[in-house]
Image 1 (cartoon, rainbow, N blue to C red):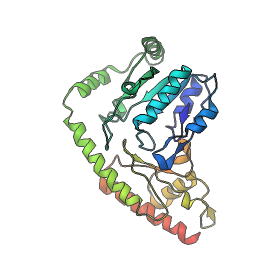
Image 2: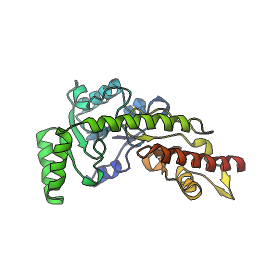
Image 3: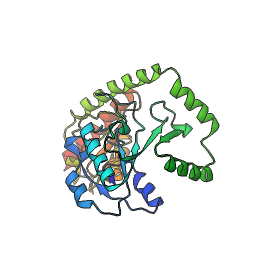
Image 4: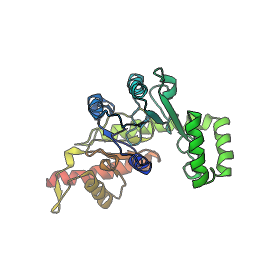
Length: 281
């Protein structure tokens, strides 16, 4: 089970393990929380695993504790393994982050996945770690041993320093991201035809752009978020990511993991391009 919007690799992870993803929709106007009615309809004895990603990529949404506990109760009841992708655990702005395992009163089998890529800006080092049931972790180690031998040794040493060393840089980065988030949300919601809830974590926004779907410019119709992202790239020279790629049409993903001047200019360019669509609709 995965929840849309989902990180683009999640369905392929499942297929590589000879599984088939069951996609459960979420409510965009309710912090992208799961549609539990749809989850109930999809229940079947073949389900083995559920992936939870909070804070989320692409939405930045942070699910509340009640939602997490409710999902864990399903997992415990039906004997599902839960993979908790917590790569953005330190980048939570409006509340204190709680690892899912700390909310696991139901006793579900949780595998927690952590990464050095986001909190410590170590994307190129390709280093992270997992915690969970020892049988599963040992099996994961066997697969990794045959696939890549091990995480690179330099990355391991750097990861230890990142995790055990001075954390002041993380606090500085988090403060900067919070400021950027607020700036980006303010600018997005002042753009006609676009709306976006304030994400609680990560460094993405996932605005609703359905207003512009179906419009035309120079004889070309913008049918999908892929069409809109291509149009923005061509006319505004600004990169966005189509929501359809994350299993959620009608949105685009924006990132504020760059300096404020750059992304504000990008948003201004996007606005100018969208206004041309509006004028020719």
